[in-house]
Length: 193
Image (cartoon, rainbow, N blue to C red):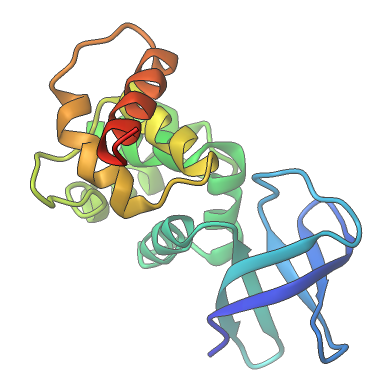
């Protein structure tokens, strides 16, 4: 099983990227393009390898959390890898998790290839299984989840963000941007800044 691929972007299309590794092998990886790509860019994608009779297919994600959510989505009856990737292309990680935790069938029905029955099945199978319960109640406030995603994008590690999540939840702020500012202040304090 290929856990991740590290290399440079050789080429890319609407739904995939070809990564050239140091050994000179090019891997085609179906990818949700959560961040813009440039040719020659160094990249590391966490991968899910689907082995079928007629093909070996790789699906790639910039973050491990996205891969874990993808794996949970494909465990839902009737939901295949291409549809799961489509969900993570159409919406952010935090939006999908929040929709499932809040039981928002209408939101999930907007995703490509998802009807009412499948949306209900996703919620039935995954609600309560997507958020960590480390030291605090599950984070279902979408503004906080968006802020946590932004902090990850700024390079902070998941463990650092989890360490301040309880303090963030104690505040009732109006926007995700306000939570990002609060998160940065809390992270600086923890580093002694």
